[in-house]
Image 1: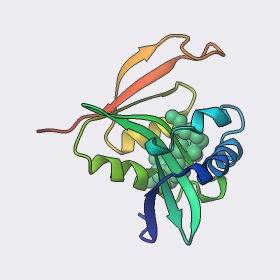
Image 2 (image 1 turned 90 degrees about the horizontal axis):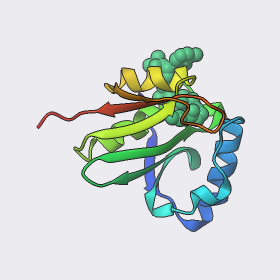
Image 3 (image 1 turned 90 degrees about the vertical axis):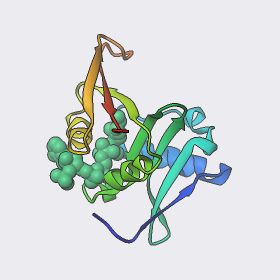
Length: 139
Ligand SMILES: CC(C)(COP(=O)(O)OP(=O)(O)OC[C@H]1O[C@@H](n2cnc3c(N)ncnc32)[C@H](O)[C@@H]1OP(=O)(O)O)[C@@H](O)C(=O)NCCC(=O)NCCS
């Protein structure tokens, strides 16, 4: 686990930076710029004054993750793990969906205690199936 990481909420000035970070990190399936217009829902991870990743999420009865991305040159160093561990501090169950072909993300979520609870056939516009995963808190 990286120990020099900090978090803050996004603000309007961050949104184009987050878009570029997402595009470089995930060339095929990155988000459109307009999807980032919800800065209140974005937690940013920072190392040495640089934005190294972010998570877009909403908190209701559960925490729902809409997008999580690590800067391309900071992958496999625990950034996404740290972001999800920060969300676990909210003490609610966490749900998310991902592309069936995203093995890396699937293995990461499994490692962090998520379980697949559902599969949606041909959910994405390219016909790919979605996996719904959940991290359950025990009350
Ligand atoms: C998926 C993503 C967020 C992971 O971020 P990350 O910061 O690299 O993740 P971490 O460093 O915390 O953890 C990486 C974990 O992924 C898994 N992993 C790493 N490399 C892998 C590989 N080549 N194959 C399979 N699994 C791998 C491991 O479980 C690893 O944990 P470990 O280092 O303890 O073994 C990042 O790759 C990313 O931004 N991808 C593009 C956007 C995306 O796909 N987002 C998820 C959409 S649901």
